[in-house]
Length: 376
Image (cartoon, rainbow, N blue to C red; front, side, top):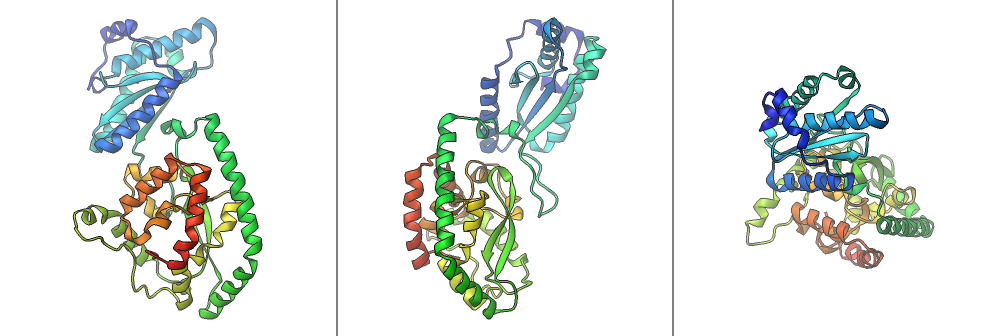
């Protein structure tokens, strides 16, 4: 690749007639497109961001030209140049990078750009440039309980202020507030009864709090009724989650449908089994809906150690929609659905969201709770 080679004065001169930079809209579309291509190709993508100094007039134009020439000199034929922020930040997308060579590619690309800028002899510009290197897929956190933050520059389509999307989100949020507040009031006697039963079934608190990963990878504390004995070992569930995520490919090669659930779990109390089968243990999440961590309808919020097992395309389920108390997965199969199928259901919902879809899922949820079909 060209950006792995040495840069000469001749390279800089040859780039003066290079094609113009993509504008902000087209470049952000290119970021989204190339990011999604990596999910299919299992390769990686590097995004080099060059922040220009805050200067005006002819000097600003000259800075942009020098940076563009330098980036053009180190770019390969596949790389894409464009404005990330007009007059402020110029970006270079390097697609189809070998994941095993990702770190070295980033170092070579940044070093080649610095050399290309130095060749132009503008020391003041060199000192005032800011350089950032982003990669996709992002490196996973070393701590199983840690959640890596999302950089919006890698997901421009998720933060776009589209009027139609904003209008729907406002209506959806309004429905969440009204129905969650109403249900919390109406179900207060049921909350009290379940809390007493949980307390009587085994020592420990009535409620169980757990960190989950929400929309755009934002962590939050989710509330449930406690269904396990206090101080239960969660290693069993961690091993199950790892198996569930990796078992999809094996299940797809089998003729008979498999059942994906953790059976004979000795950590669950007798009342806890009933609460899980009927999903009544999820009712305290109405509070999470009311305060905005969750929605009534959406994908199931994953655990941090679950997220670490995700393939890049799996993560779209927590990027494209706010997590919900119920969703397509909960009402069409639950434990009889492979993990990949569950993700596809979540993505189908996220990409076709409407108030009517939410209403249909909400109306189907009580039947799924009563029958307990596929419940874990």
